[in-house]
Image (tube, rainbow, N blue to C red):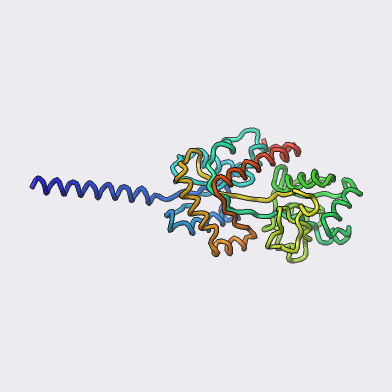
Length: 323
């Protein structure tokens, strides 16, 4: 009887331990998106969360917008490094904001463990179609030549001081050796409306936002800012065709808190890279004019380091500050 009781106790204990282990394994992963629901970053995160559920289990999207993405990014940085909290790192949070904000709640260079890049979205230099026709500007070379012959006569709009459009515009001006007046608006939509109404001459906007008006003929696409042409606008040349080495785009990817064990990062990378490489993901992302970009943790880490250094120069050259 004692032996039978001992055996039952042992089996019961083993069952409880197994249940506890299974319960621990079934804990959902929280993926923090540092922007509001419904935008391109949020949509792509939800697509991937659905794709990895078979390999990683449930992934819950937790939107934490505010302070240009800093609130959500800080929540990732300060989370336990156990693989159960991951988040989005983006151009703003991990390359621009560290130079734009006088005080940052996290260190973009040291507080994250890279998992994989997710997406690249080209920016595009667009002009009001009527303005381009009136000024006889059909190419980037035409635009630069006009600006040099008429210093200060061209202006461009952006979603605000320190926004992606502002920084891209300043980088373009520097590389082209031209001067154009920057007119900041309170957000990307007002900046685009100003371009459509002819209040400004050109903008550097992300392709997803500009595409509908390019297709309708209201805006003329002059050049994309990525190193290679965009599959969404294959007929439009790159800025780099005229200004060698010019490359700037909008990107985001996945990170975990610094200190997350390498084997956990490797598991996350394997699952999300497989999701990014799936034909279904590529089709879904194409509707957002976003290109999936899978990478190793080391590759994404090196890429973010380079972007941080690049934007330090651009932001400091503009003198832009948020606080």
